[in-house]
Image (cartoon, rainbow, N blue to C red; front, side):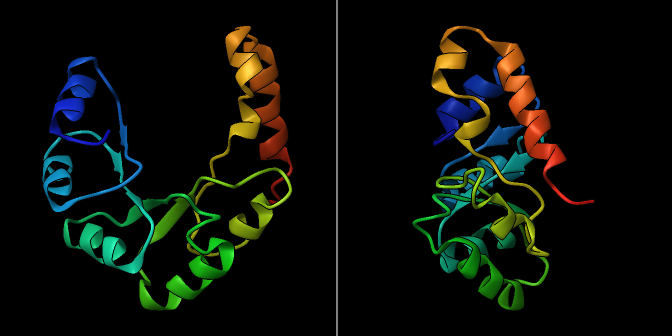
Length: 140
């Protein structure tokens, strides 16, 4: 979701939640009143602050790898102590634990759990298996 028009289309289609790749003041205003859970996408401290001013305390860091990765999120934990993140963009099987080991990360997202070929082939079993495998790799 990038703007009010797409937000309305998503809500009219029955979306249970909204995820954005980026934010603006106008979009955050609309998201704050949309009535479903929202995960706004941020990539820098100004956007984190702006999203928190609109009441969001769970944010998507995108693109995570280009925005500083796990070291960036570790540094943000002292500045934005009440904010938690779901990094996406450059997160993969090899580096997911770098993110998930951080106290201010509640989840990660990555395309490795839904390869394009699997989606094209409607191979839902492969996607399910990849998701289960990813979850099982996370220490309790």
